[in-house]
Image (cartoon, rainbow, N blue to C red; front, side, top):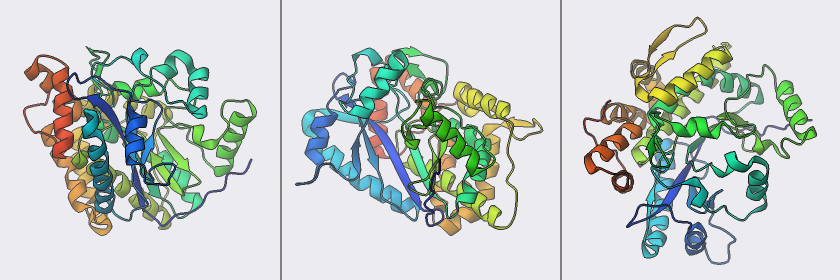
Length: 383
């Protein structure tokens, strides 16, 4: 099988943000995506170009066009969010984004009636029905197919950095899981989801996809749901590691970190460098550690097994990538990673909101308020 990769302008950007629709009074999820999407659909169009349907009717996704900079992408998102808010207010619907909803339960949610979603649920059954999760996806443009897999493989070294920063799913069905990101471990239960294989050549990837199609595991390449994957049709590497985040500031910071990492790797490849990788067993352990402990995770740094606190690593990484961010026009957004470190990641802020309010609807109200404010509310949230 041949998979054609369509090169993109280097380091161009696309961002996808999944949002939960909640009742403004109870905080419960509400299955009103179709009504909301009808309200924002331009006259004569089948759908809004940047506000999309998702697996569950309690979810919509806001996406950007192809952007050159993170500020441009955030301006794009903000404009779409204004349309969503105008449509959601009359419905009595609030907006939030986190890896999971704190207390709504999966078996009460309705699935969008589309063939590809129905097929997914038919195949995956109990696990598929439990995908009450929300994430952020960041696409970064790649100008050569030969760079794609080296970048995917090397990005796995930074998996725990991205997951710890975005971790926002401590609660599941009303219980505190004691994980920072329960979403990360839920999503990997689906076939072809989870960590990617570290292929050494494009032909190995083609052979894998051919095998999956031949044996009926998938019908199309986009059904490979890895946490980091090539997107051949768009000419990007797509990073799907992150939990849904509540604020535009966090979305911009994560987008900037992702764009800077990919751009840095792309330039190093241009200079003839071989990008470092880690054994798959270390990558897997780092995923678990960052899902469990979030910003308190001690992560494995390299193939030699050296370890360090993820927050210390992030502080040094921001410094190292600062010239890249300046060149890409996202210096402020990359520096906003420090705001997350100071304020606490969303999982920490959610637990603090639950303690302060005495119940989990207080968490939903805090998430809604942060989304409106576009910045995280700072406080003594570190555990």
